[in-house]
Amino acid sequence: MNHLVLADLSDEELASLVSSQNEAYDILMERYEIKLMRYIRRLSVLNQQEVEDILQDVFLKAYMYINDFDKSLKFSSWIYRITHNAVISEHRKWAKYAYEPIDQDAENIIQLIDDIDFGYDFDRKILRDIMQKGIASIPLKEREAIQLYYMEGFCMQEISDILKKPIGSIATLIRRGKQRLKKFIDRNFPSKS
Amino acid sequence: MIKSTIANRVSKKIRKKSVRPIPSWLFVIRNDLFWALAVLSICFGGIIASLWIFLIRQEEFDLYYLVLVDSDAFIILVLLPCLWLLLMFLLIGTTIFNLKHTNKGYRFRVFPVLVATILSSLILGSFLHSTGWSYSLDLLLKQNIQPYREVRDRRVNLWINPEDGMMSGVIEKVKNDILYVRDLDGYIWEVDIAGIPRPPLELMQIGMHIRILGFSLDEEIFIAESIRPWRPSFIK
Image 1 (cartoon, each protein chain N blue to C red):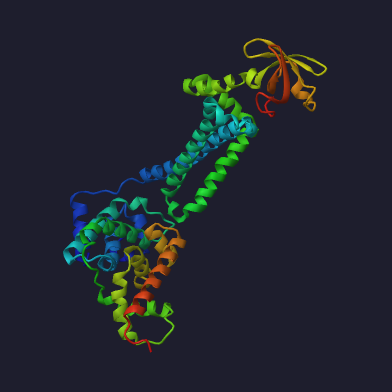
Image 2 (cartoon, one colour):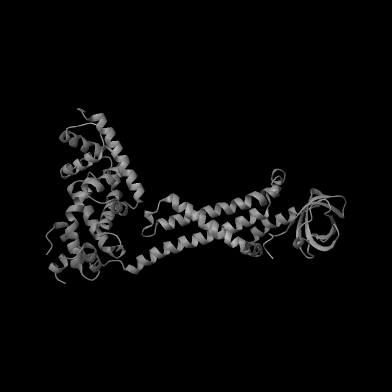
C-alpha cells in the first residue's frame, strides 16, 4: 500500500499494519507528533530538547510494543498512556520546577470555567488568566485528568484507558480538581461582582 | 515522505537499527498468565476457605472456653484457623493483583473486586466443604505434611482427657442408655447417656467414632453431657 492510501486509514487500522509495513507507523507518528509534544509540555516543565527526547522514546517504545495494542481501545488512548508513563517516569527531574501553563490552553480554559459553578458573575478574561495559575497549583493527578478532559478533549472512558484507573476514579479526580480550582479562584479573583 | 522532524528521526532509527516490534504471542501469554494466576488464586482461596470452614465447623464454639486455660487448645482452636484465614487473604490479595494486571483490569474498582474475590473463595470453599472434600484434604495434609500432622494430632490428644471431661472413641456396643466406647488408648468405657436427650440414631451406630463431653465417675464410667461425631455429620 502506498503512502496516500495508508493516509486514508484510521489510527487503529494503521496500527494493525505496522508489523508488516513501517510506512503505517510513519503516518501514525506524523499524526501524533504535535499532539503528544503539546501533551508533554502541558504535563511537565521540560525544555524543548527534553520534550523531544521523551517523545522520541515514546515513539520507539510504542513501535516495539505495537503488538500489545488492544484493538478494543482507541489508538490515541494507548499512545497517550505510553506518553503519560514516560513523562511520569521523568517526574523527579522536573517536579521541583513550577508548572507553567501553555498559551494554546487559553481557549479550552473557558470551557472549564463554564463547568465550574462560581455562584457569581465575573470577568472571564481576567478569570482565565488566574485559572491558568490555578491549574498550575493543583496536584499532578488532578491536573492531568483535567487537562486530558478539557484541553485534550478525551471522554471519561478514554481518560480511564490512558491513566489506567476506573472511570469513577477519573470522575473523582476531575471533581476534586475543580473544587480546588474554585477555592483558588475564590481566594485570588479580585472582583466578585 | 515524512515531514515532521521527530517522526523522521525515529523512522530512520527504526530502519537503521532494524528494530522490530515484540511478537504478539508474548503479550498474549503475559495477559493469559495474569488471568490464569487470578483464577488459580481464587481456586486456592476456595480450597483454603474450605479447610477453614472445616476447622471452624469441627471445633464447636462451646469448646472455646478451653482456649483460656489450655495452650494446646489455643493452637488447635484459634491459631490454625487464623493461619488458614491469613493464607486465604494473602491469596485474595494475589487475585486482585493479578486481575489488576490483566489488559483491562484497571477498569475494575478495588472494593468490588475484593468483595467478589472473597465471595468467590467462600462460595467455592463452602461447596468443597459440603461435598466432604475439605475432610479428605485435611486427611491428605495430615498424611503428607509433618508439621500439619503434629498440630492436628494435638487436637486428637485434646480428646484423650476423660479426667478433664473430654474423651473420644469408637462405639463397640450399645445397651439401653449405656454406650461401650473404646477410647484412643484402647480402654473400654461405659458411657452413660441417660442424662442427655437421645442422640440421633446414626450417631449410635456400632463402629461410629464419637467425641463425648462430660465427666468421669471412675476409670471405667463416663457420664455424658453431650455427644458429637468425630468428623462432621455430612461425611459418611
